[in-house]
Amino acid sequence: MDCVVTMTTVAAWKIYNDTQGRQQAMPLDTVFWRNNNSSSRPLPHIRNGQARFLPIRNPVFARDLLIFQENAEGCQMVFGNLLGDTILIDDLDSANHYRKGVVQSRIPFSTLVTRQGERIHSNGKFAGLQNKAPPREKLCGQVFRCTPPQAIPNLYGRD
Image 1: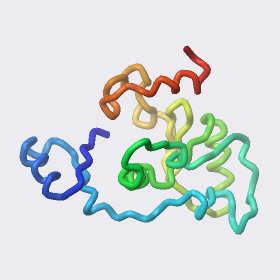
Image 2: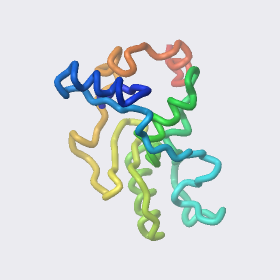
Image 3: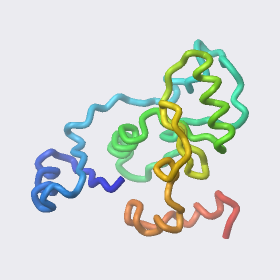
Image 4: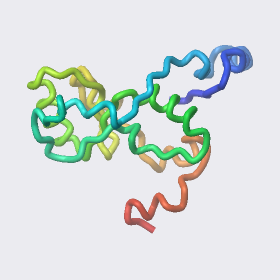
């Protein structure tokens, strides 16, 4: 997604006009914001403090993994809006197992994304080019227009 986030609708309209409507813009003053506090909303497989089934890997809300060094409230609004209740899980087998367990428990839920970039839509669709994130190398310098912090390779055990 290539979207410019602005503080105001006026600034978004300027971008719209300057690009003849080709650039997506998200003005924060018109974004519906619900505080997606992870402590107040459990993962879909947990109801009333009880797990309906045991996931075979590690599901987590994607938004809970983000760390914002500046403008945390604005960033939480933007990424909370974009990610919603998207769940990150280790791999495609785990994701399909999780989806099956949630569906059998008759619980609606959002999109699942694996650590390899594969996506299972909330309607159950998976596989195909539209459901796979581009390789990380291809995104280098394109995402957020900055390079990852130096600590990132250490988190993944790479130099």
